Amino acid sequence: MPIIIGFNASNLIKSCIFIAHFYENWKPVAKLKLILLIGVMNNNTADQFTEVITYCKNIFEVKQKDYGTAWRILRLSSLTDQIYIKANRIRSLQVKDKRLVDEGIVPEFVGIVNYSVMALIQLELGIAESADMSADESIELYTKMLNDARDLMFNKNHDYDEAWRNMRVSSFTDIILMKLLRIKQIEDNEGQTLVSEGLDANYQDIINYSLFALIKLIVEKEND
Image (cartoon, rainbow, N blue to C red; front, side, top):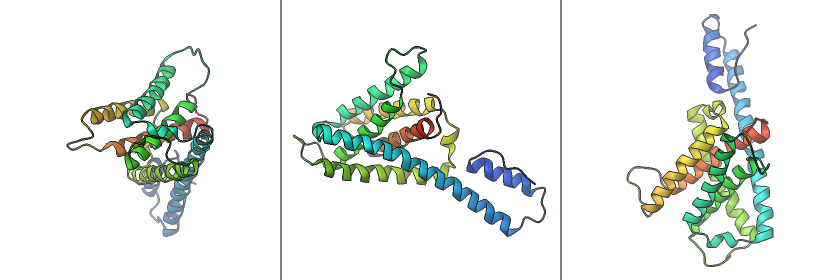
């Protein structure tokens, strides 16, 4: 009986093509089993995303109740700098052998997700002069922005065949830092781009790369 190796769509499909070469009677029922197996894998990704999104959202909700929506006064450049500080600390912890504060990198990735969602809200609503919305309103907007980023990920994940599963957490960190440098350049250009994606797309990508990292760290228990 053939054994399927690997656990992503790319390896799965390649394995089935390989097996097909040795089985002349590749019956429709076998193809159906392949489709169902890929479906299980994709549902697994969706479940894992839901788990880490819920983790981030719970922390956001608690902080809204503790601090209110004072973040509404922050300009985009301030939020970008906050995200950069967290991403840079993650990278620093990843390259250093010794840690003076044993907090780990999970809280930093959560912070990156939540600050990036705040940035998307600021992009849509503009900057306020005060904490101009309730905690419930901010949580509703947070959920909308995070769901939009998640839906973008599902579309890209379909096209890229879950390639992120073969990436290291350190690679996610570097890509986030790269995107932050792009955002800083766009901000310096007063939000104008010639052919590149705008600020919103970059913040959404940062959210999704952070969620990928959290899946590996929280759900799959991968080391830092």
